[in-house]
Amino acid sequence: MSASSFDVMSVRADDAVRGTARADGRKLCSLPAWPLDKLMHWCNNPSSMSSDNIDVRVVEFGPVTFTDEARSIQTRAARGETAVVRLGSIIFFCANRDAWMLDPEDGFARCLMRDGAKHPLGIIETKTQFAVKWNADYAIQGEAFTYIQRGTTSVHTITGYPIRPISQSS
Image (tube, rainbow, N blue to C red):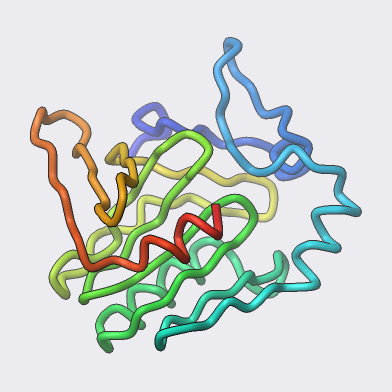
């Protein structure tokens, strides 16, 4: 994959945390524009909203990377688990042997697994760079998760996902 095919280009991690990552005036990374001390406080004091056998949690930066979490959510989806995990401003969730990575601020999505079949992660991550090849746009309407795969005009609507915990994590 070439970096030019990415909607979110490589940015310096400190710029991403400050929300200042830009190129040609275009937003590159939607990590929260929070002061680092508030971000670290929020990440180090995770909330837990587990209910109805849905594991909902916030994980902290550092020990867990976006790539680690994407692989973890794929594994959990393969086991048939339902989970919602927030890492920074990115939400990972799995249900019904599907797994997704979401950017709720911009409505971007990356399908990580569908019907038990793993999809490429589409993540480039180093200590100083983070990039995601978002391949869909999504919306939550009532109890439905609707997405449009980029490059197509097909609209797909899925029910049975943990919509309330996803929305509460946004």
